[in-house]
Image (cartoon, rainbow, N blue to C red):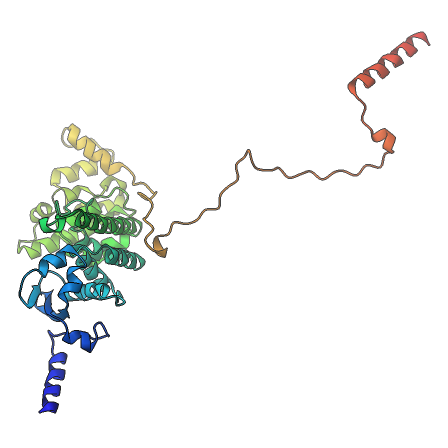
Length: 385
């Protein structure tokens, strides 16, 4: 009977949807003393995590409010199980395992929602180390709702989280780490715009996330055609998601004002023809672009709004980065420039002295008065000689 019960427990531990605190997160003795069980995960991918009310209630006001109920099982269905596991690891003073981008992103989300600013800092620094164009797209997909300064961020946190000043400070610190990471991610997208715009993950972005990228004036693309083709692919994917017919009108409706982001007048020749053939612009707008590019008369009178649009399409993009990155990791550390000495403080190299073989008496310089008197004396001698 004893062997069968042990086998059954081992079998349950290996079943999906259960968690037995592997990797020495909590010892067997501590596991028996746990008085609460969390069922954490989203979309059906849930694991069970034993915990201790007194320990976790003291970590944050969110845990305190969550553990105020009398039930022994609490369902946390708004946080990925990997992020919740790293949150518990931090609170139980176990080393966190932020080995992948997905785990670090989930842990950052859990740290934000449970107001754990030290874990949010750790996740932000780890994600900054792994930051490239593809990772930046993944980060911005979820990070926009955790930031305080990005467009589309949550207007206000949950009211229970702001019941005291400590909770408000923790929330502000978490948002600050998210803002710094998002700032660095946007700079990476600026610097490697071609890779980001050709990445297939761009098609999965929401309209707000796409607008956050393509509206940037500092996108350093090799050609505006790359941006136009990326917008066309996103519009095609958006029509398929909403089960709309793949027509030019539907694609323009899906893009809205984003269709005006490529600077068409920076293109010429075949590239301009390919960009206009995508039909992101209205027929009359395409005719105006063609006339302006070929220096022909406009087919219709150009109004002030259209003239402003044509000038914007002809304006070159800046080559300098928008700002300096926030130093979160060695990857974002700014280059150290050697200080140049000031012109006032710079010392001029000394000229080497020329050797002189004249006698010591002749090498002595005479004063101005002595030279004048000697010359005057020689003049008188010549007169009276």
